[in-house]
Image (cartoon, rainbow, N blue to C red):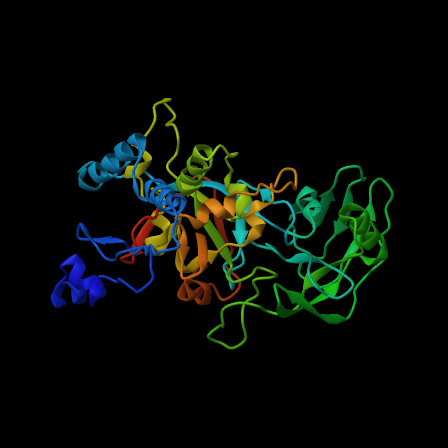
Length: 410
């Protein structure tokens, strides 16, 4: 009641805020042009002038807009009232990550698994240590230097790493067995193994070793620790109407991960203001990067990104969207961990990405960036597991349903 009285909010105002989606502890500080909370700082007999200076510095850095930010805020307000049509939002980049926690593979066009909705063979394989724990680049940054490439027509997975000959895996993709060879010498002995219990981010999952001892030795040399190649062997994903579940491979939560280029650029701007290196979308290991195209075929820029459906943080409020001819459901936000600190090009740690995100993307002890998506169940079940669906760079992206959430910017 104290905050309510100080802010001059009536009971009706509080109820209106709840109906608008306001929750205790969320990031929605202003509703209808009115603040929704207060911050109290207490000074006592043991407080010093340095404490007061620290408080004033905190208030200035956190709440006082710089001139450029005032302009951006004004532009955003103008954009909300602007009657011009929004700039088109499209798929700018498309990535498949065949090996969990390793380098991504950019593709122009790629099929979706019709049951799970994931990009075909995304996070299908991983590297397991002696204890059965899947390796992650936070502890093993050399994983970022592994560059997998899938050739679906030839049934080949090739993996390159600095200082090593390219490893080629001949894949019967629809089966759980793999033959391996290290270029230029071929060794094509079958290497199927029994299913084993594995650990992925503290949770149990299942896989089977593939590629044989030759592949295991190659990966050990590439990563610097004993490990073996494993393939996901049990479905981990949304339940199907006919029973069972669709497989999302070794993905953490959902079949697809989407980020907007505008949100990445907002973060990079915040990093530059702190004197830190900017980052690219690859740092967040997305499958789909969306945004407003930067130039039209005639060479002119489209409408300002703030008028785009993918304006910074806009994806936070999407609940469903169309990508080309597909309809996706947003399963929820992606909570980030220290993996975003690993430079996907070098494996070096950045050190400031998560801290900067925490200043404006924190929600209930989670630091969210990007959204998880899945194919609408009706579309997947109509496909019956046989219809081939594709996503392509350049596909138009159209939000078809939104929640009351508002874009989040620093």
